[in-house]
Length: 297
Image 1 (cartoon, rainbow, N blue to C red):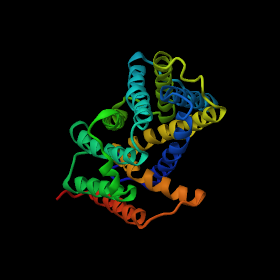
Image 2 (cartoon, rainbow, N blue to C red):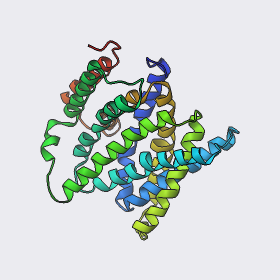
Image 3 (cartoon, rainbow, N blue to C red):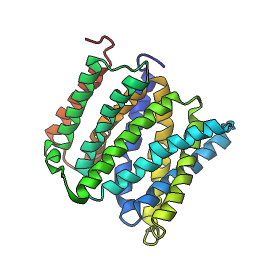
């Protein structure tokens, strides 16, 4: 792994932020008429089919070996099927703003887990400071008042726990993606999405057998969009970046996605941007810069 991200890594990170930032609106539309379990299952299935076409068109070889496919199934479960469902399900009980705050825990989980399980991504003082500063920046972007909406009882609490657990799943997935004994990102992304989609469909059929009865055509179109952009393409980008620059570097995207989403809303929908967004972005970038300083104090 490169000790310092290259220009290609930064370009890939920006692309990842843009693909993930496109998921919020499509997910919101899809879950309005489709059970969250089916949103998860179908977006993964679409992603697997889309990437399978890429594998065949580029004449790549399918991965072989039972042990390797067990790795793919594990990544599909913990990095896709479980967190996709938990996030979609949990946001039914809490505000989207609070969801954004809770998702900011992903980078914090990553740096702690990476310290213990990835020898070349040890936690340093500057890295810790950088991630905390970035988290503060995220809080400013989303608005500090979102923290006041955290509830300690009822279904809201259950929803909050579900999203926090999904953050742990995403963080674990990033670490496992570094350790998998396979180096073909396209084939790996394809196998992971296919595995996750198969498990997702089985789960959705058992959990919500009638979850598609009220689904609209627009919801299905959104699921297709979810499958191709923030699932297939994003998964491919994650595996490319995590191999090249590390799991901690990939996790920065979780701080930048809300900024991108707010900026996109301002450009396309005429939504207003407050000074919080600019101040928060400066802190996020400062945190990233601090965490990339090689010398630990």
